[in-house]
Image 1 (cartoon, rainbow, N blue to C red):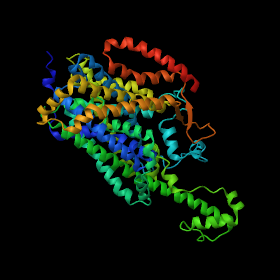
Image 2: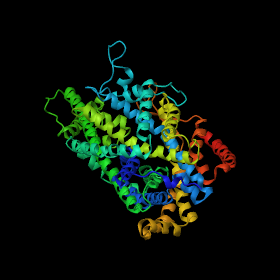
Image 3: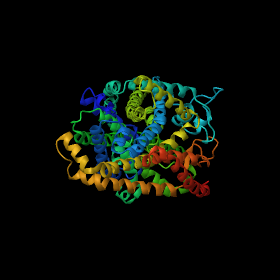
Image 4: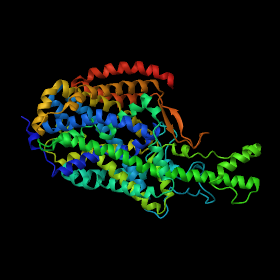
Length: 599
């Protein structure tokens, strides 16, 4: 008889548990992906489907994972094996998702560390282009693009023009990569005993830094332009299916659902902990953080857009003054549009020859939040005492990434121990060390010159479809195999009352239906679109614009493996995988034949 679940460690206090869950749920996706999606889908209009799906999809599944983990007091693999031996594949699938994401997520932390180390300088290295070898001017690639682009693509990634060119390992990123995994290992070396202490810093510091940035951001010129742009809804976006699909996917990313980590964390609670209240509180914190972070980000984006707008107008004013021999104070920012219109009517040919830039504030605001390592770093260079703000920003990102990794690794370690992959005589420190070392080695693929393309591949296909399938299987297993009535009785035993009507309807019908619809439309969308990736190619005629290229044929095999391996485990037990592989190979051969027309 396996009695290991009776001897499970426990949290020192409720605060440790809540902070760990908040840290796992609230990650880089809340601070950067959510603001980007808001910009892409009509500003405040995106918040409407996000909040609706957060309530109907995210909160019910979060409550379900908390409750089932707390009641059965096991990790993700143990929970589903207990419900039915044939459901062990759901736990293995969760582990695969966590492992896949852990492999590349710590690379992002390594990038953050690289920028953090470079922020401790009087002049930020990405604020100006480096000199060429002859010291007679700036490096051509940097001059043709920008200093922030050059620092990111060349000095950080040393990126190659295609995914087929590996470019070799970058030693500076290798050191940061090793440091990132070593730091993570120290924090999780003894499970929740050490993780529970680390979250006091990693889960709270980001809120302090975000608040500081909000206060500072609101004092910057043009910050309110960004906030206004964010909260001005384009309601026509609500009629587009992609808006709802992206909102549903964002709910999964922001809650870290189906990873297995939340089930493990809740299993360390007292059996009579109020898991329903925990789910509601963490959901509220999660939603608030997304909106709060978007507001902070767009105060800075508004400042950056206003700076670029003013610079654009100033350049045009100078060109007009020189062309028409006007006094310096004849054209100002306030009367620029009026005078330009007058000159365009009087001297249309001369104005056309000047080839003035189009200066539109909304255009600068809608250019997208892009990468944290490009847009935000550019904005920081224009702020007074820029190194201080750079240090604060990257410390915040480091804490967000690290606290998310706690849950990712927990979702790997606990199932590995349940599967008895490691001898029971091995101490926890050794099990954790071997796992981190393995992930560190595999993660070297993301440190090549083509590593950024590989990371995007893993991020796009390794955690989208699998998460949806695992989450759907989780809810179906609890409601229709474990039994909703039995589950209701378990919750009554734990918190003193049965789940109300909202939980019942959500678990039985609404949440599974929403997930199924999102999955179907997601697959339809992906199958119908050509698979492209954006590259940094200095030899391209379009440089510095990123060039879209088609994936080579062999990458489709990688995409298939990333997106299908978890589904195989989700539906069938391990010993049935042999038959699944043959079936999926046949299906893939048909799809791949069709996909050759894209190349």
